[in-house]
Length: 437
Ligand SMILES: Cc1cc2nc3c(=O)[nH]c(=O)nc-3n(C[C@H](O)[C@H](O)[C@H](O)COP(=O)(O)OP(=O)(O)OC[C@H]3O[C@@H](n4cnc5c(N)ncnc54)[C@H](O)[C@@H]3O)c2cc1C
Image (tube, rainbow, N blue to C red; front, side, top):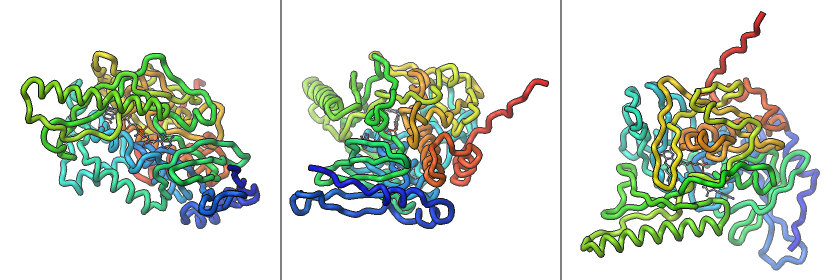
């Protein structure tokens, strides 16, 4: 079946609006129309959507990226292959985001933090005592226990209120660059969509979009195990407890085949544990909760303009183009488990904008666990508070790049930082460069 191409004239009309005109037009949602390919059966059409920013992946980072882009005035479309927002946090069941605080003060705030706090409040939960730094290796005391069902609903509401157009059950099949942006072919059950956009934001967790475009990605031979979360006993008390988990060795989010394999392995292991309990005479043990999908710790990371190294991370390097803080022990899971390595007192690492931008790319930015970093640095950068902070930075950058019809690394850092601060984010301040006389 052939696609009718979006006339190039229309694409330019979509992206070339600037300044006040852009701000006014941007209050509209993404524009949508249906075209009938020649010879297609009646009812089969291609949806054509024009937008400024296309965010792919509505997980921990993507939800925040989309809200930020839309609040900054960009027409924003969010494509999520699943049926709800939150990704690993909600579908994966890892509903204890961290860490927003370090050494007695808040280091990550903004849209993600507001959603987390709102979820706790509406759920009648409580926040940890952030004023007291937890003892070493008890960093989890500062993770925030949230109700993942409520978080998914509140995140969706915040997207809609910001003007984000959400498309569930859809994923990109092919991406072509155009002089002023991208043409993206997207599919979902009964849906074919062609999106014309100025900027792409890859929040798929495994840099799927970057891979589809054919840009370099990083991946080591050994990867951390994934986990499938579940609970034996009474029904799961959302927002009040954590679930149990089994390791899923070899879990890989790269494609539907490997994702299926991870789910099969995780469920088989949980079933085996249940049967073993019954065989030991514990006949009353029931499966009270099992998450619909395995959760993934590691697959691809992007090869960015900057690769954050372990030394950068543990040394608390403040990059010149830092756009957010990060805080978590180095936390590399292996076949035998994990021994988190806490940061030295006072250290707060940062993430540079150039680690969100794939080398050799234009009009493309990435957020979440696939930011450009070596394996050890990534084992810490992948946590949810940092994913949310990079998501907000990516959304703001994409909105500004669309506004100026440019590319993320051309966005003036001062404007980006100002926009982020206006939307509640905490942005690290690099030391001024001192020139020797
Ligand atoms: C078992 C486990 C325990 C963890 N423990 C903690 C913890 O204690 N504290 C903490 O803060 N962090 C923890 N983490 C890390 C953290 O949860 C994740 O790294 C983080 O949530 C990843 O966020 P993300 O936005 O990059 O990806 P995700 O949240 O996974 O979101 C990716 C989204 O993209 C969608 N998607 C993927 N591909 C496509 C595509 N091609 N098209 C459309 N949509 C697509 C997915 O459906 C998903 O919704 C843990 C992770 C795991 C797996």
